[in-house]
Length: 160
Ligand SMILES: CC(C)(COP(=O)(O)OP(=O)(O)OC[C@H]1O[C@@H](n2cnc3c(N)ncnc32)[C@H](O)[C@@H]1OP(=O)(O)O)[C@@H](O)C(=O)NCCC(=O)NCCS
Image (cartoon, rainbow, N blue to C red; front, top):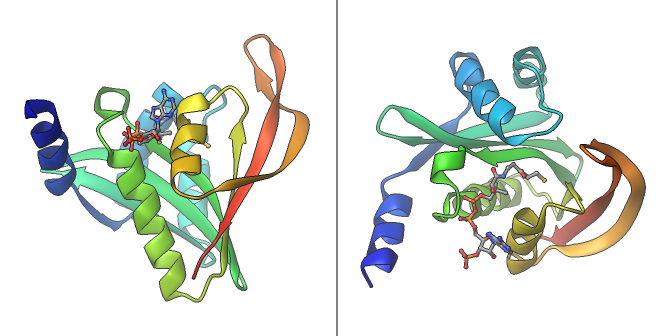
């Protein structure tokens, strides 16, 4: 019960706002900690300047806990990046980020949200499946990995 209460408090006290250029250093710092082939700070900054992309950050007090980046083309969107800082993972923040991204997509008339995930990323795949994403296909040996190459899973869910 105490654990459930702590999870609820964590989720409630963190709020999302649009990502801006002042967030890039903190976002890139999380990215460095959680990705095998991280986006650079320059790539995050460049992405923010392109209108078809939008990003949000999850803030608790003054601390940036996580973020996501989505690209919208016509009525389809792609979740290009999502991460929660290691010390705040498994507290429901990843779910909060994706649910927010879905809400933003719905507001702009997007009818399908797509993503790609490493086959070994079982926690992310579990999260996506629990949110209704389904497997569309496999990109064989798409990613570099510590052991060589690994497959990318293409997933999507309709939005309505
Ligand atoms: C993927 C990531 C964003 C998820 O964020 P998070 O805050 O840890 O996720 P949540 O706490 O919201 O997890 C929610 C769900 O994920 C799933 N999940 C979490 N850990 C899991 C695991 N080990 N196995 C299977 N499913 C798991 C569960 O469905 C869980 O549901 P629950 O709320 O009932 O427990 C985060 O782990 C992360 O930043 N990873 C590194 C970057 C990354 O891999 N990004 C995705 C690239 S495609």
